[in-house]
Image (cartoon, rainbow, N blue to C red; front, side, top):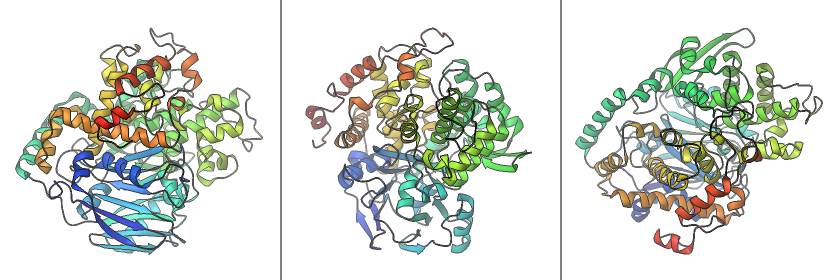
Length: 600
C-alpha cells in the first residue's frame, strides 16, 4: 500500500536541536488508520503525553496526508494537523484545503511532525529531499499576506506553497490559525498559537514528485464521472454560484441560525447576508482548491467609506454566521472588514465572532462596564465596535489582551461564563442545537469541542424529525464514522454530495490497491473515533464535559417553532454512549477497545 497512494514517509523536524530525519510509517498503521485524520490520531496517541502544556516544549504539530491527497480525484486536497489545543486543552485536529497539503504530498511525505521550540524565529523550507530551517526574524511580526509574499520573493519562486502564522499566532492568541494560500486555514483550536510558541513563522513547500496511484486509468474514469455528477447536483450548483453562503436563507428560515449570541434562532436581516445578496454586492470572482471543480470560494471586494478598499476571499457561511447574525450585524462593510482583520492577523473568525457576541450581550445586560472595555460600548448590530474589538484582540491591546485568551477563559475572568456559548472551550458553530438535536449531540461529543464538521447531521435531520431525540445516537455515530473516513482519505466533505461510501472505497482501491468492505471501512472510522476519545479520557475528559451551555438546556427558542424546545442532553448522551459501547461516563469499555484492536 505504501508504494501507491501513500509514500510511507514521515518527515520529523526538531526545532530545539535542528535535527531533521525521515522515518518509515509502518504499513500496518496505514492499513489501520488510512492517513490524514486517522494517522494524526495514531501519532498523537503515541507521542503527546496527557499532562503537557499546549504551548510548551512537548506539544507537537502533526501534519498528515491521506491516500487521495494530491491525486486528480476531485476534492483530494484536505490535509490534517493534530495537536493538543491551547484553547480547550483537548486532543484537537484541523483540516485545511487549498494547495499546501497536496504540495507536501508531492514533496514525498505522508506526514510532517514538528517538535521542540526554536530559540529564535524560523521558517521551514521543504524542497523535496532538501529540508532547511531558515531564520525568520525579518518577517516576524508581519501580517499573513505580507509574510506569504515575502517568502515567495525570498525563495524566488511564486509557485511555492506557504502556510504561516500572523501576529495572532506570534502573540499566542489561543484562537490563532495556521493560514495556507493566504485564505485557507487550519482554523479551529489554536494551532497557530502552538506554531507561535515554537517560534515557527511559516512552512514553505516545493514538491515535484507527483503522486503515484495503482490504477491511474480507473482513477481518471471515476474522477471524470464525479465531475459530471457534481455539475448536475442541485446543491453543488448553488454552492458554485454563491459559495457556502448559499445556506444562509434556509438555515435562518428553519429557525436555527446563531443570532445575537444564540439568544434567538432567526435573524431579521438574513436576506441581506444571503449568497445571492453577497454575489450581487461584493463578489468579484471564484476561487478553487486543488483538484476541485466546485469553486465554492468567492473572491470579494468592497469600497468602504470607513475602511477604504477591502479585498479578501469569502466570507464563508460560518464567518457570516458568527461575525454577522450572531453579532446582529448585517452590513457587508463591517463583516468584510472584520473577516479581513481575522484573516490578516491569523485568527479563527468563528471563535473571534463568538467572543465579540458574548461581550455585546454582557454589555447590553449591564454585566460588564464601559470602563472594563476601554471606553467601548458594544451592542448587537454595532459593526464598527465589532471591528474595533477584533482589532484590539489581534493587537492584544487593552481588553483585547484578555479576549485573546479565548471565550471560556475570558468569560471566567469577567464573571460572565453563563453567556459563553462553547463546549470544552471551543465556541459553537453557527447552527443552534435547539433546532437540530443531532447537532446538539455532535457539539457535545466532538473530541475538540463544539465543531460542526465532526458529524454534520443537519441535512440528514431536515429529511426527518430534527427536533426528536430518538435515533440521534445512531445517526451521530454513523455520521462520525463516515466523516472520520472522509477526513482520513483527505477528501473535501463536499464530495459526499456525489460520492457515497461505496464510491470512496472504489477510489481507495484504485489509488492504493487496498480492498475494504463497507463494514471494514466503518470499523476504521470507529477505531479513529474511539482512539480520539481515549486521548481525551487520558487528559481527564468524560461525560461532565460533553455538555452544552445552560442556555440550550433551559431556554426554548423564542420563535415558538414546533419542537424547538430545550436540548435533552442527558437523554441524547445516554443513547449515544449505548450505541458507541461506552460506559455511563462516556468512556469506551475495554471490550469495545479490544474489538477495535486498540490497547487499553
